[in-house]
Length: 136
Image (tube, rainbow, N blue to C red; front, side, top):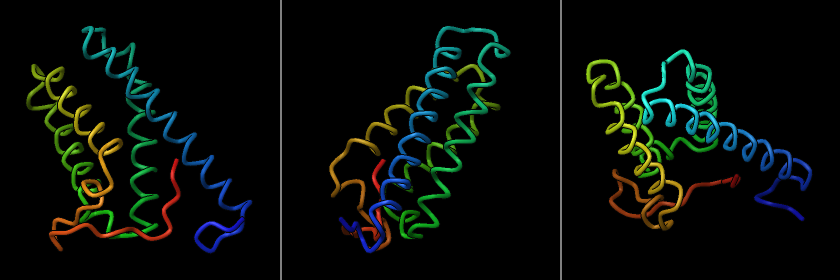
C-alpha cells in the first residue's frame, strides 16, 4: 500500500507520530482548560501549558513544512488567530476563560469542519487542496 508516494512503513510512522502528538496536545489543552475554567492556581497546570504549546508548535511546523499553503488555508489562518488570542491572555488576563472558549470553538471548526471550509484559501478565494497530507 502506497500513500501519496511514500512507503507503507513511512506512512504509518508519520500517521502514528502525528496522532500521538495530537493526543499529547489535547491532553495539554485539557489540563490548561481545567486550570483556567476552574480558577486553579497556575502552578498546578503550568506543565500542561508547556505540553500544549510545545506539541502545538510542532504540529504547526509539521503542517507548514509539509505544504506552505496551509498558512493561507482557513485551517492555518484560524490556527494563527488562535495564537493571537493566546497572546491576549496577558493583557486581558481577566478574560482568560472567555478567550479559551473562543479558541476551543475555533479548534473544533478547524478539526471537524468540512474540507471545503478547512481548505478554503483566503488568497485564492476558493478551496485549494494540500499535497502529501498525513492525517492524524
